Length: 264
Image 1 (cartoon, rainbow, N blue to C red):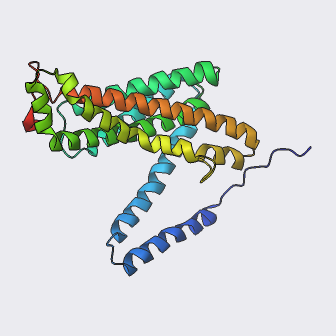
Image 2 (image 1 turned 60 degrees about the vertical axis):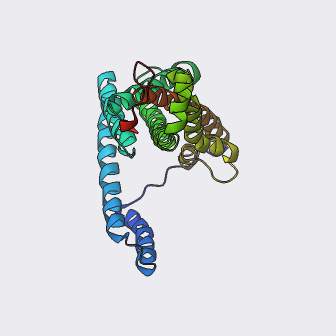
Image 3 (image 1 turned 180 degrees about the horizontal axis):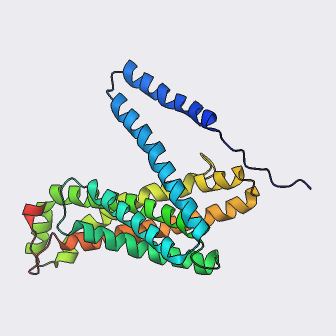
């Protein structure tokens, strides 16, 4: 029986070889006059700096293995995700930061607690090796779905404000008047996840599964973990987008069930 393959370490020079990919993109940008050279350079530098910074922090947190450091890191990740979610909106929503923080925190906390305690059964619960990567995946996908839902909701409100007001004039409650718009926003937020579930393993091997295989894990073990990841991300995106839209749509309606058109 052969043992698990050792992880191939990458030297600085090997890593530098990957920079060639950025050069290819820059060459395409110059050739096609896309004007993306500066953004590509900045993005590449930020990628390396941010990932190395996170790597150093993770090394320290893994070595300490204390629950409070894990909580601090999770709070920092949530803060960054919150800011990223609202920064993609075309027009600020009053209380948008609080809305995004609530949606992301609740969806992540519930999904993470279920996965760690009942599915993976991590002991102790704050094991950094598990909780931080899993929380990062949940937060990243929840952030994207909340941003997509918020963007679609704003677009629907701008395009269908007259329809909403007509419904309100006919006696519909605020919740009933905006329900078609909420439904459209939720579909827009969840379609990428659903499409990913349809093609996973056929078009590409997901990141977590690929990483485990490269680290020497059995493909079948990696597949089981990836199934858990796909299902937990689907649940997290649904909950986060639902919470975000439900909380956000209230900002556009008065207690008297009138549409605040100046916010649209």
